[in-house]
Image (tube, rainbow, N blue to C red; front, side, top):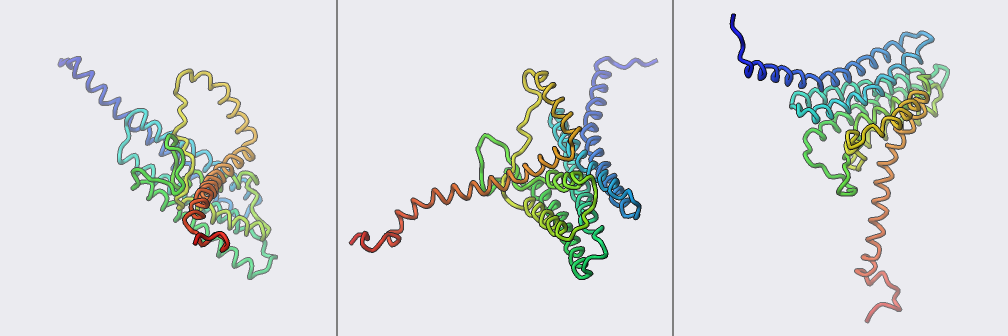
Length: 299
């Protein structure tokens, strides 16, 4: 009976463990895809015409929100275990297109425009539904473009640069944009839009999300958060409290967080433009003598 050399056995065991570690990030990516698939099936189930349509739409929104931490963990685990690969990156991008592109755009369309009452003006109803289809498609293509730009950019710089020691995204990340739409649906417990003016507001909301994804504005990156620093046990109690509040008041908390994140990018861009105009004003006044009154113009 042949006995394997202990050194060779140790090398083979390490190789098996290494292969298993490569599978771990992909399992989280598969969870992201599964959540997106479940969201799509729940959105389609809401079209069945039963009285529980809002329940299906709410579950569709919750599935998208549930996929966001899965999407954040797969990359972190790959970096922590040094198992990042081209296959993993491509799989993650495809998962994001499905879960944070197709699923929320379909949910936004069905929740915001499909259940508008037939009693409203037929022409207005037709225009709203057509505009809804178009704007939800813009969200999908904007998210796909955002992912493509992220994949080919090595060191992207936002139009409004921030502090050099901070990490930023260029454009709103697609999980955040999808979370914003899903959190809005969850805030309403999935009850669909039935008023024409709310449908118009929702139309603008979806369009704004699509624009922010393809913009070159800076958005804060959560990658700089490190939960594995010294004394991690000190964070257990605060994290437990935050998790309980989020679970107990998920509709309000998640919508508030998503909305705050969106407006943080808008505010950062507005503040940068305002400060830039303030810096230019004294320079323009000194470099343009014709701006001074005639009585004070140098001869």
